[in-house]
Length: 224
Image 1 (tube, one colour):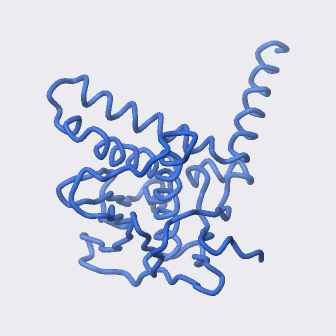
Image 2 (cartoon, rainbow, N blue to C red):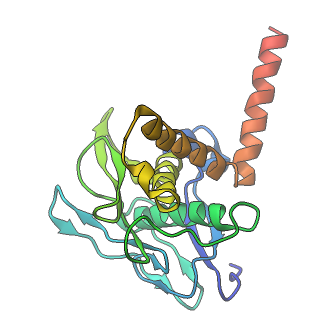
């Protein structure tokens, strides 16, 4: 395995929702290279994002994913709490980097609260939900049962990047966090959706699948 640049970190993450990844092999778990800053610790924890894996339904704090400092890599078995921690952190981190890079804002985005780190709870409890909360400085991702299967919202690239979009917008425009009208709430949700789309399109394999699906749809429409 190739090592990342000294200042970078490699981590594994889903490029899409796991249910979508079942249909498209190229959207399954892939390794990405991130630029999390000078601080990288078990958790995962970076200078801007920290996973705190506390499950409110079980009143349990799960052990943190370990950082391989020699290889500069986070990696864990696919069906494990540690992998889900890594997946959530990597998705949040890559979404933040997308907004901060030179082609987008080109600057550091502050959070909408005091402190440097956004806290991520990948197993926040049993509920069909996920949300950003400024008061607790958290992104909270829940899990639930559907069709005899446990669904983890922290594994969905769309959900995680959408909620990260809320946190980013709150840092840029804090007053938008107050629903003074339907327009402000609607803008928050639309920004979250746009963030999810743009974050997915960062990955070449996702772009290829999207183009192929569009082409197949066009062929079926014109040559049916």
